[in-house]
Amino acid sequence: MTVGVGKKRVAICAVAQLKNDPDLWHTRFQGMLLEILEDLQRQTGFRYGEGGVEQIVSVSDDFLDARTISNNGVQDVLGGQYLAEEKMAQEGLNAIGYANAVILSGHKDVVLIMGHCKESQGESRNLITNCGFDPFYGRAVGLDYLNAAGLQARAYMAKSGLTDDHLARIVARSRQWAAKNPYANARETLPPGKVKASPMLCDPIRQLHAYPVSDGAVGLLLASEERAREYTDRPVWITGFANAMDAFFFGDRDLTSNFALKKAAAKACERAGIRDLKGAADVVEVMDCYAYQQPMWMEGLGFCGDGEGARFIDEGGPGKYRVNLSGGALAGNPMIIAGLYRAVEAALQLKGEAGDHQVPDARCAVAHSTNGPAGQFHSVLILEA
Image 1 (tube, rainbow, N blue to C red):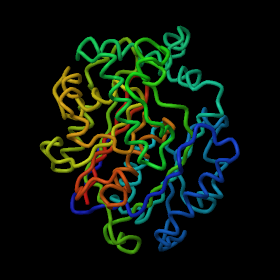
Image 2 (spheres, rainbow, N blue to C red):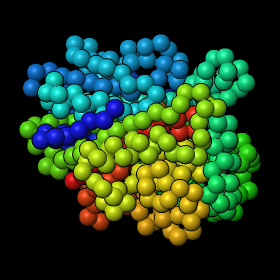
Image 3 (cartoon, one colour):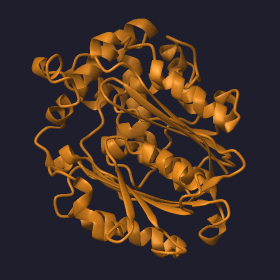
Image 4 (cartoon, helix red, strand yellow):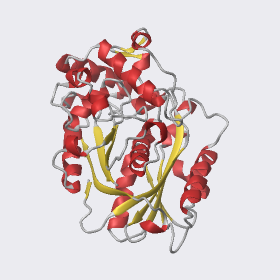
């Protein structure tokens, strides 16, 4: 799906995020979302109903919520009892694409996005992600997102020259930036040696190469260009959005090709009128659930050539292109809303509200997300101030 802006523009007017936590056992979903709702209302003063928010897009997942129709239990907090509400499951960044389309179509002028997830309450997120595979040829052999990532990591490391040393440096850098982000889950700084000494989780992925189990919630208020100034003096404009899907059957894919990400990035850039994303972006937020994915996804976005991930790290690419100054997904976001956290962080940078990890004079930001085994599905969002 691609969403073009044409003569109309859609703005992100306000964002809110809950601090990511390893186990929010003391707070129900409703309480998590209420904090987000009240924060957004404090920022914008928005109201529900005619002339205000008439459309809500929620993000949650039945498996992780341990209930069918996961959005049904939080309608009172979303404000969806008497309004239009639609759920985006499994991949949160697409809620922005959906809301963008609703506004560009003229259907509604103001849309509220609210997402929540508690990874901690399931016995094993690997058991849950096993259900993302074909029931006959995938689930039965025990495939899940972790061991799929292990297979991809091994193939990509062989292709790019990425080593255990590179992975340790990626994690150490992510933690250094996470320490400056009050919303990150894992904020403890880690020397590369400690990362390399962590137990093997799924060869070649070590325990500290993987994002920690996280609980969180996030929200955004979007409005048409005509209405945006009612809610903010510093709108962030959505100029490009696209997504793409690779083959469903795991064995049909080239795990190192970045096929879907390249397609999504190209379409998003086309809609934004950007020829060279590497030259245009002032800040990049990629969804790196595993350390090897950070350079791999940067390849897919066009910041380095195919198979050049190790070189990208050696030449200081993450610092040069200001990659994941929030700490990224490696510092801990729930997987299904990690893309929304990327968008929130990108928007904060463009608003000049990113605190200790602010980029001076940021004008263009990229937010990326992925879902499915080993980057099967990718979405790319381009924002401009």
